[in-house]
Amino acid sequence: MSDVWRNTVDFFDRFPYLEALAIVGLFVLLAWLFDRMLIGFLRRLVNRSETEFDDKLLDLLHRPIFTTVGLVAFLLKSILNLIILPEGIVKPKGPGPGAEAVL
Image 1: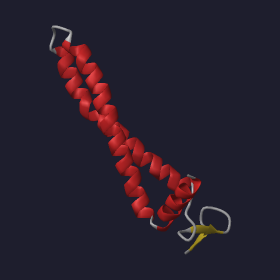
Image 2: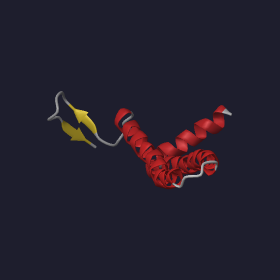
Image 3: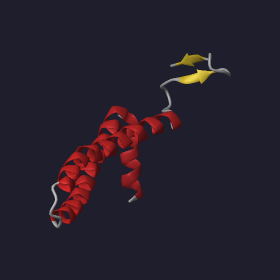
Image 4: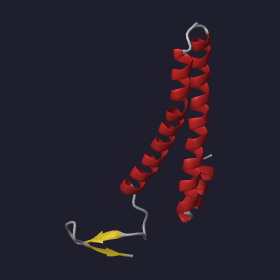
């Protein structure tokens, strides 16, 4: 199993844009699943009540839940790019914020 994992990591190291697309796709899938499970559970609870307020509130929460998980994916990928700078991209040369960049 470790060979499969290593080959996958090596593949995505060669194609960083494909890696970003895969991460975003994975998080879109997770957002959809989380949204379906959470909204489905809440919809069953809401259907037990007689008021329409909770139905409308749930309809309003549907889109922000999906969007929030998508934004978490974007932020996670951005943070990973800042923490783990790929070799050969841009590395600071010298100390301080005004350091030259070497490609």
